[in-house]
Image (cartoon, rainbow, N blue to C red; front, side):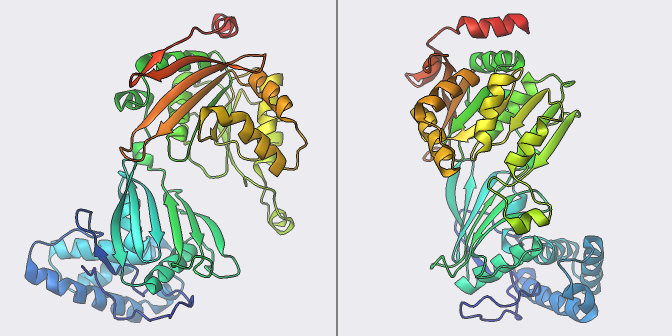
Length: 443
């Protein structure tokens, strides 16, 4: 199925040419059982005419608004919308076709082209482009969505996404990380000079409209009401916590939901992330964004800072609590040190494939960061600094995300399991220590 095929499309033969917003970013065949990028039209005679209208509208935009289209990536969005409205009105389409045509033109010029419907779809959390093939993660399960007409089409799509983020898709920068300005989605693009199947594009959305509250996570079976109550009580009493698990297991969603329930609204919060994902609703908070790696000299000249820079500066900003989106670099050990020296209540997440791998993961981060820390020291320190670790699991076959363990750390460098899955249910298997009880009593 072709969606508004564009006669201005050029064949690049694999080379990355200058992106042109009037080239088609929406030619694709629809995989059966998936949503079409544009609203279907029931009237077949009208449907046959719509692609022609789309082509005509593109040509009119080029002719009537050439200067605006030439600088489309820097143009005022309202001016572009007005130009689209004027052109659509001049074609005298029916009301239904006018709406569909306007949506398609805005997706082409102001949005993500063929990916725009998935950007808007709150049930889609991730979009993956592998050469001409497009897949989406819907409700935790990967499914095929669209097939582009060629690899050249995916190259043009990568060019457009980069340009929309004020960057250039080029082989001298084969690995790119972008932030989509409209919704904060994280975009990773691997250039087709490196990815032999064509550009590899991964878009992780935040879906602001479906940021889940703790009550909804309980309803979906991620955790029980008993576990939720326990964690909220512990974090409200300023226990330090880590939410751990593999990619796409729901760590950030759980951290956000727990923070909203556990943190009093009048506390001063400092949030550090490499990409804004938590979107906490507190008024008395500072949101800081930095690189999750060392900053290169030329980047620092342009005012770019690392999470480690921000973390150390945050300690001078009188944080009531400090929340880090994820521990992945040397800032992890500053975070752990904070748990030893400050008044508690710090929260973060960490990627782990298995609950037993926490010390190994931190040891690897230390080695990668050039820190000479022994495994024994890391184990002893992290278990003294972190009070609770919540492990979450993602089942890719069902899409289910579940809390699998809640463990309390001991100062002797071991863990004490409080909740675990048994017989398919998350149940209490241990009693909290005197240390946690003292936190509750002091709160």
